[in-house]
Length: 289
Image (tube, rainbow, N blue to C red; front, side, top):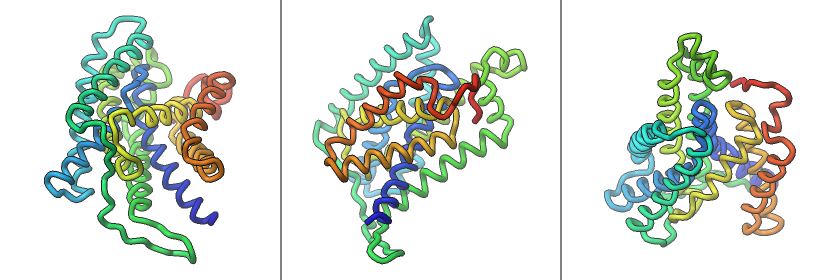
């Protein structure tokens, strides 16, 4: 039982890391608090669902198109947010909230309010240990989420572009004085965030039901994990995501599935009250990616 629980927690934790990674990167580089984050993940899930349902595409075939489509949307969102006046953080919050409402109504128009689930056509179950089942959904979630997280980590630590992004997160004006094109880094952050959102959407559609209002949960998860880890800490994001997944899964196991969202909300409130700059950041003034 505990081995099965651990497999579920790890799979969910890695998916939560993928869900929060794009949000954290965009917020760290641009200071834009994207309240439409969850709606965009659901939109990507609907795109994958439509391609599989209408054209008979395999699950893996939908991933590149979803990533490309959401990258285009996030780049367009960046162009819109560039026109937002100061105070940027507050105005971007209002703007993205409006975008979230628009996205919800667009999805409601095209897909109705019915609950939909991306089918797991490859429904074979593996049992590497006695009494422990590992489904293809577990493997897809763990594999894609860990690969995307590792790729972003390597880009940030092994490339000049990544160093420029990290410098922009840590101290924007100093990065500008060092010759880094800060506005270009903002566009890059939105593009990378779009790819991550596009990848998270189809996985979200296999793990949970798709419906127009379903993005709220994904946005809440991204906010909780980002506040827990502090902006830009990928390793801390992974740890925070696994802790949140363990708490939610434990609450669902003991109290029922209706308590999962309450756990996330309570954690968010406690973090905002006691450690608003990140539980794992300590007293450091600048994030270390």
